[in-house]
Length: 210
Image (cartoon, rainbow, N blue to C red; front, side, top):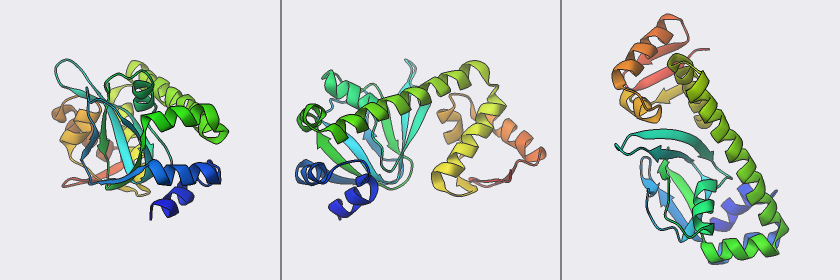
């Protein structure tokens, strides 16, 4: 199963030798929806390669409030965990399974060795840094320049792409936590979007219409 998933998601990225090495040293791990995969201040000895599912990456302020930074999809890894591994520091993010997910956990020492010895791994890591950097810039722009109703609608659109479905199963409180605001604000803005004909609300379910 592990090799099949690796080949399915990474065959166009990694050479055959690297896929074999990952299978030999990696630890195949599964998580259920809402499981915490990596927590803040957790020492990191492995980095995750996401084989199936989705993961959301969150930051936390001093009061324990969370802010969504970006999502990971199958075939990706988390650059913030990479940075912590390279600097041998504790995690500065929380990674939570958006839905049931399967990961290959790579020991830190192998990650560092491959970066120097394998060009396909090195290119993957550098490209991942670039993609995540652009996503974090987009997150900063959204917070700085977009009104909350615009951020909310963009969040819902991103969810439909992530789950390949126009129907989103989510609680208003969960959206509020991801966007670092209150449930009351989210409920009001969702009702406004429904009145505008952009979504249809049901209990713990949102249909995105346009």
